Image 1: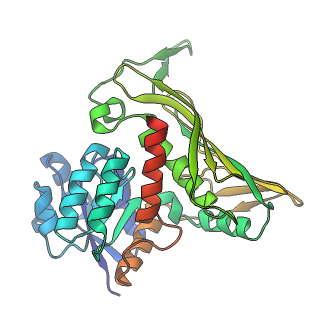
Image 2: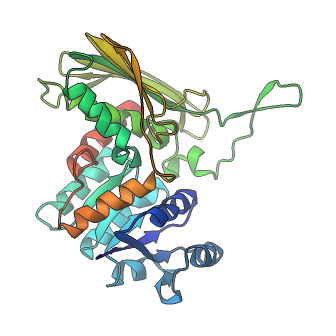
Image 3: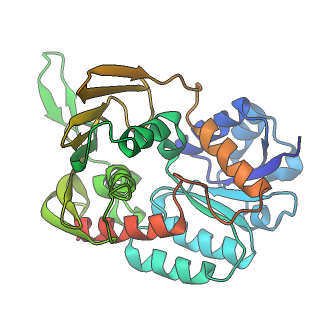
Length: 340
C-alpha cells in the first residue's frame, strides 16, 4: 500500500498526540519532524523512531525535504500564518492546527495565495473526522428531529482556579508567557476553544434546507484579563432567519464538551462533541434512545487516515465533513466578530 509521508513543525503537546495517531493508520507514515528545541527533537526522534536525516532544527529544511508529502503545522497560533505562506510558496501540502490564523485578515490572504494553485490545505479540527459526526449528520438529514431550530455548543474548563487543602477555590497566578494567556501568541478562550463550537455551528447550519451563508454574531459577552485575552466568552450566532446557535468557551468554567441540537420534533444530545470519548449520542422525540459509537484509541488517527486518502486521490481539500478553505474562511470571520 502506498503511504503518505508526513512531517511535523512544532513539537508541543498537540503534536505529541497527533504523532501517536500514526500507530493505528496504514496509509500514512510520520517521516520527518522539526523543532527549534533540540531536546524536544531528540525525544520525538527516539519515541517515534524518526531517522536522523529527517530531524531538523530549521523548519524550512523540513518544508524543502522532497520526501515529505504534507506538513502538519503544530506551532502556536500566532506562527501559523507565516509558515502556511512559506509552505504554499514551496508548494507543500498543508494541515494546520486550529485555529488556522489569529484573525480574519490573515485567512483572507491565505485564501488568495491558494487560489488557482493545486495545493492541498486543511485546518485541523479532528472531531469532524470522528464517526459520530457522520452519524449526527445522518440523523439530521433523515429528519429524526424534524426541522432544525437551534443548538447549544460549548467547550470550557477551569484552568484559572485551583482548590486548596480545604477545598476552597483560589485564582491561580497567571503566567503571562503561557501561550493561552498571551495575546501576542493568539491566546484566549475564543481562539483556543471557541473555534470548536463555531466550526460545528457552521457545519450544522449547512444542513438547513434554506441557508444563504448569512451569519450574525449577537449578544456577545466576553470577559478579558489584564493580559488582554478573553477567558469566559459567549455569543449567539444567527444563521439566516430560522436557526440560532448558542455558543460558549471558557478558561474559568467547566462548560464541558456537550452539544444539544434542537428540532421541532426532538433533540440530539452529544455527550463529548470534540473527542467522542465517550461516543454517545442521545436522541429524544418520537422515540427516545442512545447510540454508542465505537472509536479508535486516538481521535487523530481518523484525521490522518482520511486526509492521507485525500492526498492519495490528488484532492485539494478534505472530503466532507472535513474543514475546507471555505469553511475555515467562514469560521475565522465569525471568530473575529466574536472576539472583537
